[in-house]
Image (cartoon, rainbow, N blue to C red; front, side, top):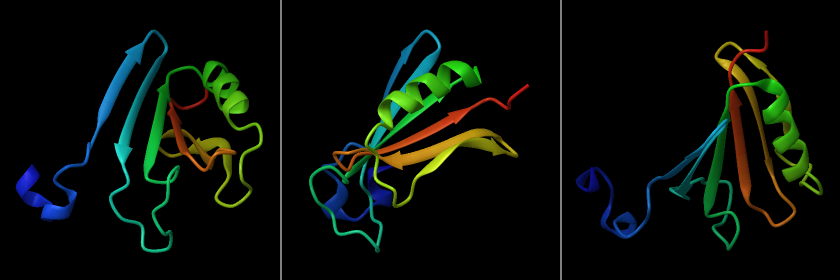
Length: 102
């Protein structure tokens, strides 16, 4: 896969993945978003994937305390399941995805 990216991105971590019980957490280096200048805090995204809406909502609400208003999307239903995202008070991007609400 390395050959698919330009040389200046070869030293980046494309994906890291952890799994613990009800949640999976993965992270990726900032690959390129033209509207944001890369700076410490916004150069990665953390993904939280869970099954149950209630468990996901608890984690979402705790991590979103003090979140930036720009780009904030509360957990909501999408055709593929539950989705929400925000930049926390430190500028780190969090993206949540869960199963469809029952």
